[in-house]
Structure formats: C-alpha cells, structure tokens
Length: 155
Image 1 (cartoon, rainbow, N blue to C red):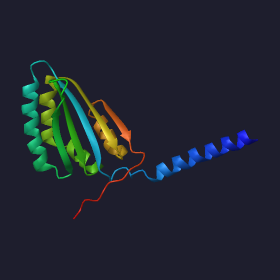
Image 2: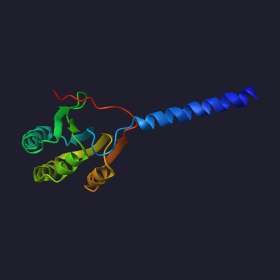
Image 3: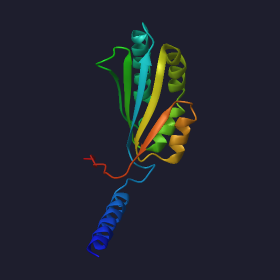
Image 4: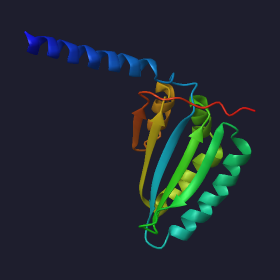
C-alpha cells in the first residue's frame, strides 16, 4: 500500500511539473528567438566566405530592423568553420529575412563555396516560420521552447 501511495505521489509530482513548465512556455510567434547557422567552407575558400558574409551583414543591418543580433564567428578549432548567430524580434522577422533578396543572392553565391550548411532554431518560433525555413531546403532543427522568459530591456 505504501509503495502504491509513493508511486501515485511521484506520478502526481511529474504531472504538476510538466503542467508548470507548459505554463512557462513562451507563445510561439511573437517572442524573440535564436537562430544558429553553421557553415563549413571548402578548402581555400574561407576568405571568400568571410568577404561575402561581411557584405550581406551590412545589408541585413541596414534593411532588417527585426534582426536584433547578427554575428559571424569562426570556429576556434577549424579555420574553415563559421557560425552565424542571429536573434530575431519575432517569427515575422525571420520570414522577412528569408524573403530578403540580399540574403537569397548571398546564399546563391556562398553555397558553392561550402561543403556543409545547417540551421538550428532555439525558442518559440511559429510553425509558419519553421516551415518557411525548411522550404528553402536547408537542413533545419527546431528546438522548441519549453519554458523561460524574455527580459524587457525597454528604458
């Protein structure tokens, strides 16, 4: 009898924990989220990849107010490896980015210089935005938000 009571209480605690986590999840779509794009340049192409990435970075900064952070970093263990880290204001900002002609031109030009390109999404991204990214043919993994918060930094 004591064993059954312990089992029941354990099950109840797990269910309450899962419900609390679901209540703390951010709403998909209107929340900020992170995108990580991993690129690997073909031998001898790293400098060209950096030059092309620098050019598109300036265009994204000028034309995409929903892109809150946009950095291009080099893998310290592999000089041919690079990572775009992007923070979007919301899912609509990602869809806007995917429709940016400058991005399309960049991807068309840089792709032949790469042997690998993958994307990871972290956060409460709308199904529509995830589908739009996957429709590009880019291998994409979405890690949906389970819980968390976004700090309001407005003055």
